[in-house]
Length: 212
Image 1: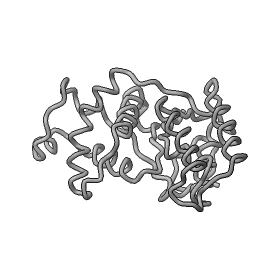
Image 2: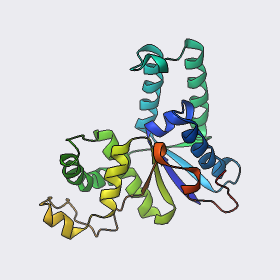
Image 3: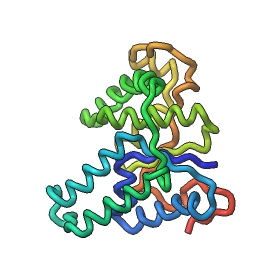
Image 4: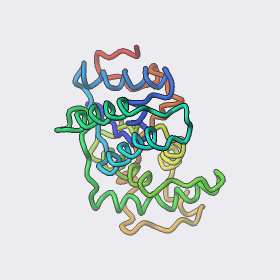
């Protein structure tokens, strides 16, 4: 069973895709659950609120006027998304717990080190918690079947750095030890799938699946 954790940016892409490629990629992912029944989709509960807020911005105050949606479209998006999270019909709401807080303690110093190399372009606290929730899913495992789906390049970058981070790298960067100092496998992050740069053929495949 494949496990996908969606952040808010990826969920918004599912309803308001920014490109045909993103739409095709998401269709392949969704088919793994809806047609093949070999995947589960998680969404952090706080990301649900972020999605509602993103839809509202597209209607009331879009950054780009070309992305503005009318009242009818806005209401249809709300109806679809509300339906898709009800009883986990498509996205299963995933609650925050103490393990995610402990994982964030591991992630935050690394995120700051990465941001220094990227013009101090920091993740939000919510973004860090999304990665932390992904770390917990990889611990539950199996690790190779867990993926974080995002349209945020910074999340993709930090996940990639964390997957290579070990005690030696922590010491070299003079990053403080986490509270519990667990073994490195405890908070191992999932592979991040960056939708704007991902092709359907690059996706993990459920048994019987097709890249489309």
